[in-house]
Length: 186
Length: 186
DNA sequence: GACCCCATGTAATTAGTTACATGATTCG
DNA sequence: CGAATCATGTAACTAATTACATGGGGTC
Image (cartoon, rainbow over all chains, first blue to last red):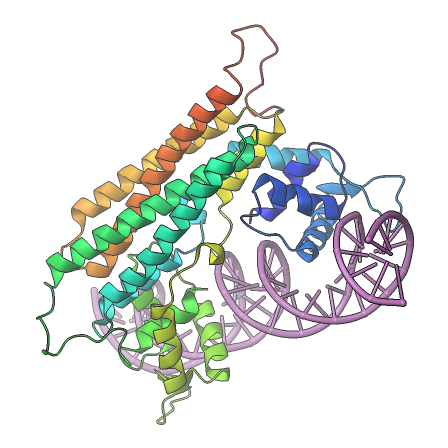
């Protein structure tokens, strides 16, 4: 539910039209989370219906300028003043996946972890490279990049912790030949 | 998009009905991400339509037993074998919020960070407490808890990094009296 | 003329939420 | 008997994705 408020935030700098809003959104976040134009327009329609946004007076049909209403400004301020609660966030697919894998017994959790780690570490490299290329003036993009890096590092460390916990919980399978859990059993 | 696959995973242990699936899901994740029963049934309906799941032969109308088809089993294995890509994840609301706040100039980013940190640190305490109470046998729940802790710690560290970056980027506002950015300007 | 960027939208589908309706069984 | 839990679902809505349709303007 961040697109709605992001549009309000972008409109707080001044009237924009839909197309510009998408560009601005992607500029701030460095294209990390691409935003479909269609969604901008449907979201704007809901915002207008709810009175958070209005089309400027000199309304060119094919070039609508949206601007914030006072109600919209209030909702934006509420957004900034309210922390993002843990319970508000979407389910963490990776955590759920490994929890399910671990309880299944039929799956080789270690190979799942291994596949994930490869991808996670690659992402970490990519972000580090991006950071070295980023210009020091682009504050929003740097914040997003830092967030991605911290999150990804945490994920890598968590994957290590998972392996350690697995080792403690059900000690490593017997060496060659034995009835090993197959790599993601078929 | 994790509910769909989670249901498949739970069904891999044997036939269940909808109600049980919800309980199992919440048991594995320690109730971190509550799952509405209604969604279980609508998801099961889609899974059945797509041939990933079927209702057992001795179909009691008011007590349907769902089980995995081979197609469903294949999709589950694919899920386990495929890493969760960075680009697949939902937008990070907190990162977006601070990026927007930072680019606005009109908002006191530091107070936004401060409000968030309070909440984040409180969450971290809660998780630590839960961890001390958890039983060592409950592997899935421990994995989820670890994930929450690592993620929340990373968030706290990121908030520090944001403040540091803000300090470097636009040095602290002048002391009392001056035209300070108000606390989440009204 | 073909192609790209600007600019607006609709349609269809999936995912998820909250709330409601219905009935059986169990237990104090 | 009443309340809780088991069990199945529908309705209405928000959010998000993908894909399509339409048209103006500029440029190679």
